[in-house]
Structures are given as C-alpha cells and as structure tokens.
Image 1 (tube, rainbow, N blue to C red):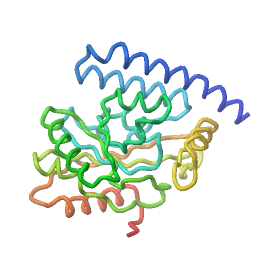
Image 2 (cartoon, one colour; image 1 turned 120 degrees about the vertical axis):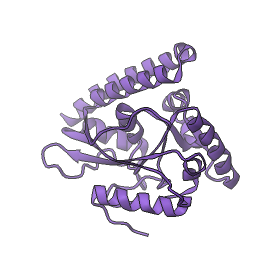
Image 3 (spheres, rainbow, N blue to C red; image 1 turned 30 degrees about the vertical axis):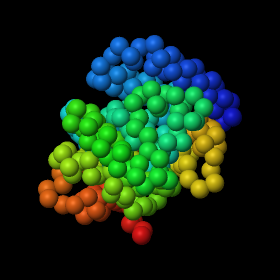
Image 4 (cartoon, helix red, strand yellow; image 1 turned 90 degrees about the vertical axis):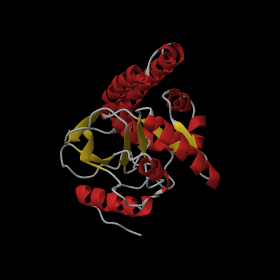
Length: 249
C-alpha cells in the first residue's frame, strides 16, 4: 500500500511541478513581487496537499517585508513548507540550480544563489540581499548551512545576517519540525542528510501516512547594536529553546 500511495502521489506531484514550470515561464514576467509571492504560496500549499503533508503553524506570522526569515534546515521540503506559510525569496547553494526540473522552479521563483566554495561570493550575496531587503522583499536563509536530522541545532553561520545588520531589518525565526500525526513524535521521512539521496527522501515522504510539517513562529528580532556573530548565537539559542533541541558545537 505504501508503494502504491507513493507512486500515485509522485505522478500528481510531477504534474504539479510541470504546471509550476509553465506558470513561471509564461506568467511571472508580467507580475509584480507581491503577485508572484501569492502564486508561490498557493502552489506550495497545493504541493504539500498532493504529497499528503499537513501544515501546522504555531504562532502568528508577521506582516509583509522587508524581513529576513531564519529557519533550521532538515530537508529539501523545508522551502515548500515555509513558502506555503510565508513565501520568501530564498538564498540557496548554487548547485540547486542544476537539479532536474526543481532547479528551474527555484530559480524562476527568484532564489539568490551562492557559491559556497568561493569566499568572496558571500559578500556579493550580502550586498544583493541588502538591495532586496531595501526594496521590501522577504528573504529566507538557513543559517546552519546544511541539513540536520532534526534532533539538534547546528551552529549558525553569521555571514548572511550582515545584510539585516547593515540596514536594520528585523529577523523572523521559524522552527521546523516534521512529526507523526498519531504519535506526535519526530518523523524522519523528509530527512535529507548524510548519505540519504534526494530520491530516497522524496519516496519516503510520498509513502508516509500522517506526516505533519510544523512551523513554530518566533518573535521579530533586531540586531540592536549586536554584531552579526553575537546576534546569530542569540538567535540560535532562542530557536533551540523553542524547539527544545540541544546545541552541539
């Protein structure tokens, strides 16, 4: 039954991905940022529905930007979950651009790509982030820099916080958890870490029953004179407390 469920969902998800690619190619060019974000949100909510993932939001989401959204990172699914609740222009590693089909969707949605193996590229992206924040955008980043299994919170990289420090933009913390609706315990289906392949993680997600994506909304926070490293550590501790997670490293 799990395999049949996953196969049926996969077919519908592929059709939805193709529909999203057509929308980006044919419609995004004539829409303003707000209209694009509304479409991204509706598309993301529908994708979660097709995958059988229930979205639960704990807390009150903030109004429109400018805003820098920070979240912990567990899965490729994180972006879809956040976009379904609070659509953002994400900052992502450059190799995502080359993922089949998905890369085109992510790029078309306005993602800012960063070359992680080039130190100077971080400065370029920070300047670009500051420009977009000044224009009123919501930007989303995963300060851990990589995915974890959801059992702890990795150290935060502070570089991308510099844009919010420079132009005094508030940060919105979002805590992500994937849980089982029956037990309330952590669900490892969407986990994308270590040797787990993207296809394996996708198949486990599609085969799951009772999978929930939970977003815990923190309070808006500003630098208030703190440098980016001090602020990043304070944000990390706040998020760990909200998710009741340990802080290794």
